[in-house]
Image (cartoon, rainbow, N blue to C red):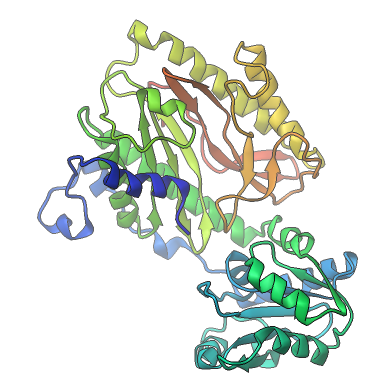
Length: 433
């Protein structure tokens, strides 16, 4: 799924023409890479895929949560939750494809008849990735048939004729509406208590993949920082990040905002030139076996000690302290909102309040297979933290017309408190220590 930063990067090309570096993969043979990027190596072999046994355990966990929440089945069409439970990566279209898990009994799939071969190919794949494949029934529908009536029949075949069916949160309205009208004896409800209940707590295998994603992102950022030059455009910097990720064997990207544009948390479409002693804010991450990283770094090139940067250095130190305060608040049982409050209160006390005046967004978001997922570190969220939950920790201070500073690292909750996947950035002068 395209990220907001990828949208900014690609959209900028249509706004204004800018010089570009020849950083495409095919140019590696003809152009010398910057030494720090050339030193990066492919790390794909370090990634250990999620096992079939772990996916079977996810189904067991989902069924337990269905019983706790009085949900008789969950229906997932496409997207991340489908991949999480089944290993299937299925593109969304106007045709209904649905994987359904009853609280009791075997899962089943409803799909167009012409897709059955593709479904069964994945069911029979070796090594196996689809849990309960041997007992999963496939129901198919032709183009002139009603897939929602077929789903209703499949539910009845599974013993779900009345009760509640949970619809995964990212299901298109047309699908959710069709399912609801085809099964009037059933009540549709949100499947989030089940899907969030499973996905929010990361297993050791998931944490290992996220650790690798974060390690790769930090190594890419450091290599590109060491390769950056005054006069380079922000688009060129982002292209350099793309190439660095390719060297590491993964897909990823980064936005790059310079000077006054760093005060816009999600950046600007305006073309920008990197200059000495101007704030540079980079943000985003990569994907490893479906698991995400999300890191921001704020730094300058050239002499960072000039008086012009005194204010920026003070703001950086405040943001760094806020990030540390949030991490310290992240212990099991603490409500999510207290983590946001720890950072926001410190920033306000330092003179950059009140409330959302300069720290304009929540402290962080859950992260895992989606870059943003449940739960969120925001005021009003009373969800208690639990070991295995993963978040971003990204306080920022944004001064319109001047600059912005954001420091973002991903972290996870342990029994002993919050733990960063990556070291925090110590200063504008030494953003990578």
